[in-house]
Length: 204
Ligand SMILES: Cc1cc2nc3c(=O)[nH]c(=O)nc-3n(C[C@H](O)[C@H](O)[C@H](O)COP(=O)(O)O)c2cc1C
Image (cartoon, rainbow, N blue to C red; front, side):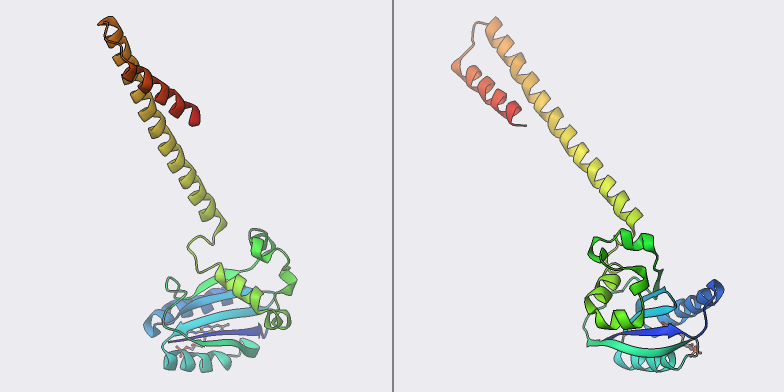
């Protein structure tokens, strides 16, 4: 398989509906071709990664290169690969904004105005970070927040279950001490168990 990343500049300012048309075409065409990837757009600049079988990628890339909707097409990375990085995306799309950048600590020093072919071709790590975010299912800040809350609730559940367990054991021990005491059968073992329980309760 082959993965290719390129940069280009729109020829004329693309309207939202022109972008929708382009994406609709990708979403219709790419699954049939077995192409997956990501397209990021801002400031009239395109950053796209395409992956799939070598010949299919090369053929599609040749078509894309001569597409009049953009110019200054330059491949910045070409890599042979065994596995897909964007298997969930027939063509993921992101219109980059200031606020998406704010949510990304790895891109703290990167400004939206830097999203242009000159800057990006000279900064492969920024390109990598921009694309990287879409590889994980957690790239969306809202999804990250929901996941964090889910994790918090799972931890609360665990803590509650543990607390209930400790209560249960403490109760049992107190009852057995009362029982033994009433029957005049309180032993050192009860005392040891009480001490151990106190230690356990103090630790948590
Ligand atoms: C920035 C940009 C990205 C594109 N990405 C894709 C793509 O991922 N898949 C695709 O089929 N066409 C893509 N196209 C459209 C192709 O350039 C071309 O119009 C299309 O493949 C022609 O499809 P056809 O052979 O079905 O007529 C893209 C065009 C531009 C300007």
